[in-house]
Image (cartoon, rainbow, N blue to C red; front, top):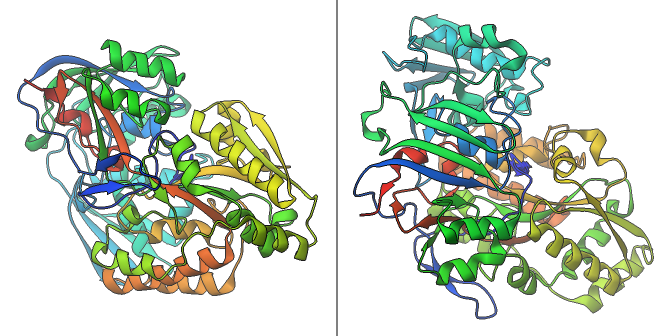
Length: 542
């Protein structure tokens, strides 16, 4: 997942429509909001382009795959580096740098590698490169936020010239699925050794196998990729020779870049500009599959929010429909669970029943106020962190503060710089003195179990250190279940526990978004763009 910045896995920005709406049919959010249609792809490109400019809402803090834990770095890396497996635009997992995998026993995964794959420096990928790449996550010196994904790994070894075997201390289905995300990225072992601490930065760069190479990185300004002519996947040969990424943090300036044509497109459209961009003749806003939901993540369960009645009351005091209008441009639906319906691509036919079984979000200020009184929490302080990182964060923070005031909680907003907000999701020390943070919890894979692993006792993504023995035991059972349908049923039970106990308070879910200027098309529209080589699909609209 990327809960929150990770907002996690994670990612820390609740930019425009960032929660998940499943299906490819027209949808309508509450209060008469505009209809929208969710599709996995924009219309196919009709021709090639020499270059295009793509807008990011922030500059990547790194291009080291082991540290990439947010939208900006993964949006770039999706076109440069690749994984053993691949998440497709319609949220399926298919072979990537591994042509196949096997699970000969519950504690073993064996990957057969694709023959003849070239790194950008011309060297050939081998099993040694895979072993070195995966082991970096397990090295404390790397500081990988993905390290917990390898918690059950006993060994990773070369078992043939083009074969790698992972042995586990206990069954772990999620580890295999995460080979389609950052944990499964393959980099040249020789390049890693040569660049050392400079790896993934403007000086050290990267040397992967994707359809684009990293050409230049001008810090504070832009980053440029160039088409890689020896790319192995002939079905994804880039339609565009050069892709230039620009970093525009201000939502209004980013919108102006779209409308003026100085940016050909960008994911995670500013929600404050959705109506304006949808009405413009300069391009089209597309909505795609999303695994994310906007949530309130509890950071301190020893303080005021340690009482379940207080968490229930705060959830009950939130007017989610108005929050969607103000924070998501009216595009979205109230969330019934910390994960969105779109996170259930593993078993989409069951998702509706799972969510029907959950209680509807209740908006009842009077009842919430009584719960606060029963908990003895009237007048108690709750600190909610906010930031200028995205306008939606401020909008939601103000809504939570107002809700708290109505029921007798003293919700204090603590504003921090964007980089400090991001630190909350990777540095436990940055959470000191904070009770709540607005997150955008998403899955990197089609399996919702990925999200719920971050609520296990002691997990890296368990920001509030919530612990529930029933939940932990059920998670281990689900993660040992190879049958996807049965695993989904077990995950639904985990979801019910999370909704009952509220270590995370669900807010709303909305589709993913991308703006494409009139001259370009072909981009996948959904959250799979974080790992799928989306830029290779973009070309001329005419």
